[in-house]
Image (cartoon, rainbow, N blue to C red; front, side, top):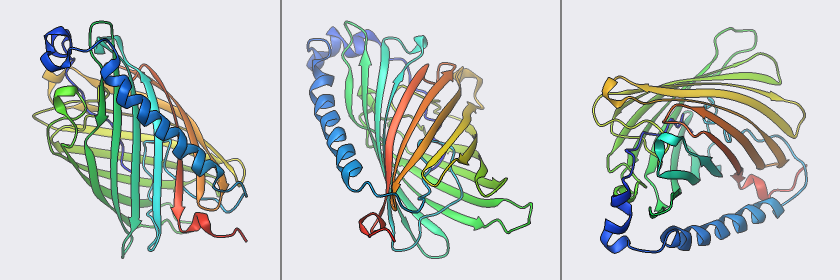
Length: 313
């Protein structure tokens, strides 16, 4: 659950994925649609399954998604926290011939001793391109990391809750199809959370990518040398025991001027607490600069096991 300022990708050339692509000489859209359609059907089945798991309201479950700005909370011991979201983005014109990208991300968190949390997530990416350019679809780069809650805010204190995360991203995606960076990434992120009231809170993130590339398809900031600095700020308000709405702004900049790319984007979204251990999420994204989507939308869910199967008191 770190700030995902995803990495810049080089613009694919038409002859790289088109007629000169050798084994990729397929009719437009066929290569990407075969695997993408099957995966989208699986997504729908998963979403409906968890939606129908139970419709009994229960105590609020805190989840980060749809927001990319992380909070300071960690998963409790003996709890398995699962998050899934599907996001579709319209890309900036500078990304042509790439037009749209669909990202489905699956994340698992589990609590360890001493306020530690172990995280693992992996995306499935589908990139849709213009006529004459073959699209791409498949697994992206997998992430594994640790989150450590350093301080819990005390009643009446101005000192916020503090946490930090360290992630390593492995090059599991196919770099030749723009699904992975082909690099190993190392990311450190600092998190603070300050409640203004029992129902309103602010989260802030500040991170640095030391080495590698945090790419997720054709969205984000790419660097092969130097660092990328990232930041995010979100405000969330609990309007009722079941509804939380919020907004955030996040972005990143590289210290290498030759990259010529920045990321700045915002999101408005919310969470609906279906029952104890089950939350549905949604968000709308608007971005600026080449490394951000022009506009996008996200839906998802978060679950806690075994809490979701327990009867609500």
